[in-house]
Amino acid sequence: QKEVEQNSGPLSVPEGAIASLNCTYSDRVSQSFFWYRQYSGKSPELIMSIYSNGDKEDGRFTAQLNKASQYVSLLIRDSQPSDSATYLCAVNMFGGYQKVTFGTGTKLQVIP
Amino acid sequence: DGGITQSPKYLFRKEGQNVTLSCEQNLNHDAMYWYRQDPGQGLRLIYYSQIVNDFQKGDIAEGYSVSREKKESFPLTVTSAQKNPTAFYLCASSGGHRYSNQPQHFGDGTRLSIL
Image (cartoon, rainbow over all chains, first blue to last red; front, top):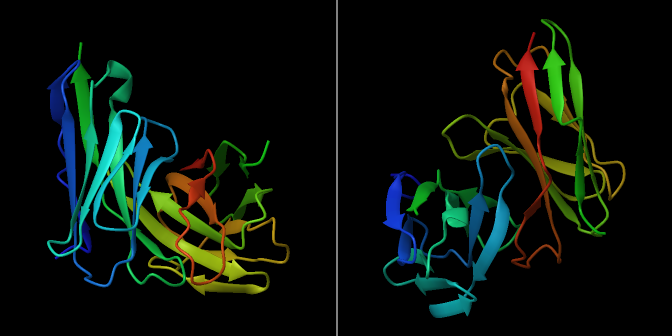
């Protein structure tokens, strides 16, 4: 079992819809969780951090964390073609020395 | 502006040659990291450093070497022992003390190819 798992996609949504991206992780003691956006040929860009159970909203983005079920998700409301990218889920597996494990990413396509 | 600078943007390596990728940050971050990304794959950790003059091997350290003589700099050398070096190399840094959970921030990356 991979430590951090994401569906590779592509996930296709129409413009204006809600895109839902999911991530599961294997280590129950994981402390912190991050979502990165990576455009083709570019480096990852941090879009959300979440540390405690529940929802965290930032503009059109909402991160949801459920530690009991070991999943973290990212919702993108009012999806725009510019949101088309690969979204990487990252998990700090040990909560200590900042060694973060990345998922392989979900490719999102927003159709105009 | 604060950030992470990687150079060069593109690099070509000849057979048997060692090449060094530069990574400099002015964010005053303690921890720095090197990742490798292959097409369609996730990020794999090569080396990381939590403090000056100390670094640890990641998951795929063979064929690579690093140094951390200054807080701001964490260069990566791809040695001739790395037989498949073609990839996108990403440097990252994160702040806070050893037990904090600060996110990593990335430079723009270096694309390395074999001539």
